[in-house]
Amino acid sequence: MRDLDSQETYLADRMGLAFEMRDLVGSGPVPQARYAAPYGVVGFGEGWWAAQLARDWVPAEFTHAGTQFVLEGGYDLGGAAGAGLYAASSGAEIVRLGWAENTEVELLASALSPYRYLRFLLLATGQRDELSRIDQALLLERDRLRPEVSLDKNPAKFLAYSLLERTPMFVVPEGYPGLAAAMQQTLARVGKSLSFTPPPSALEFFVTGLEARHEQGDPIAAVLVGEDERKKIAQQILESRVDTLIELPEPEAEGMLAKALAYWYRITWAAYYLALLYGVEPGDWEVLDHLRQAT
Image (cartoon, rainbow, N blue to C red; front, side, top):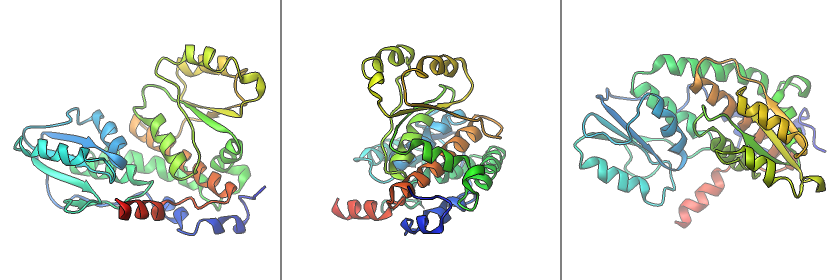
């Protein structure tokens, strides 16, 4: 088994994703103009989660005045273009973010883009205090998740070993919109591994869906997030139906947005280490570039 405390293991990271993850806080474009309220935001591709999180302070998808943000996010199958045309007919100022041609704000493709899209939205809509809480939470996570921190003190490395040769099932409270899917996405793009999340009405899913095969040793790892009642009941049911239960301690963060980003950042580091344990490149820029050229 590869050793995450050995420098040789990190040779698989040819694209240097660890450096991008380390320097994530404060990265990405910043607004170069003042944008008038009211605001609307829609998100596609890499921008979908940032748009969903923005519902906390920008409840409207589309606005007929003020500023309409369209997070194009790369491969959106034409959805972003349609949204832009619809928004343009409303009279609002259109601000498109992404890496397609003719965007007002360029944001290159990356598995770490959710933070950068969200950061731009927070700055553009005057939510600097919220951004400060997010950045503080991510810096605290980084200090104990980076490669220099040894396995015995690094929860992301420990989590990666726990997920090795297992399929994660993310159990996330409803109070964190989109977090479960965002965890799935980062595990796929960075960790090169599949995971799944239960449906919103999950208790009967836990009881019935895992009943027939759990005794055969299905390698499922239930990753439990948060401290709500749903998590406690899920834990009682799942402890006899999955290979292992993993509880993610609540991050040192203030507010839903900061906690959600901290959880996502922690899983992203774990996904990075998991890719290294499998001996594969954790970055995916080359794959996306080939796909972009092909389409």
